[in-house]
Amino acid sequence: MPSAEDAGQRQNAVATPTRIAVYPGTFDPLTLGHVDVVRRAGRLFDRVILAIAASDAKRPWFTLDERLAMAREALAGIPGVEVAALEGLTAEFARARGACALIRGLRKFSDFEFEFDLAHANRLLEPELETVVLMPSKEQFVTSSTFVKDIARHRLSAVRDFVPPCVVPYLERKMRETA
Image (cartoon, rainbow, N blue to C red; front, top):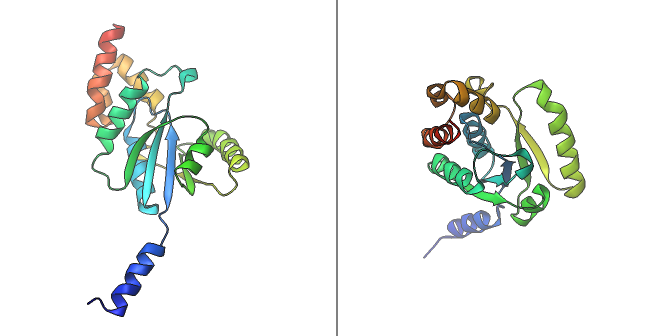
């Protein structure tokens, strides 16, 4: 028979809310910097949802399905991480998933103004939703999807230092298609 202490522990476990964060972006392609931010967010939240937007206006290199597949493979070994397609407004997506926070990566000071405006816009839409800004490790500070695509165009072999291994074949195929 369970003790009163066991019952109290179960009750506390049930009463503890799950802290969910959404990390939205285009992730075209996913980089080691993104993976680093996901790992950091995973230390702060019980669940992290990497929400990949179609972002047709940005003219992504990879389809939404390709970006979802890359992210799922790259993040498969990280507990508490889910990859999902982001449709509609980020704040509404986060609310529907029960998230308490949005994760944003900040690499350099020039990113700050954009992130500041975005955080305020999301707060207007969802006042209870916090924006948490995480900086990648110093090794990933210069890494961005744009940077990776520029490297791939000129020296494809060098991208291996900036993306998860599962992303390399996608970049190689893309370079063959555009050659």
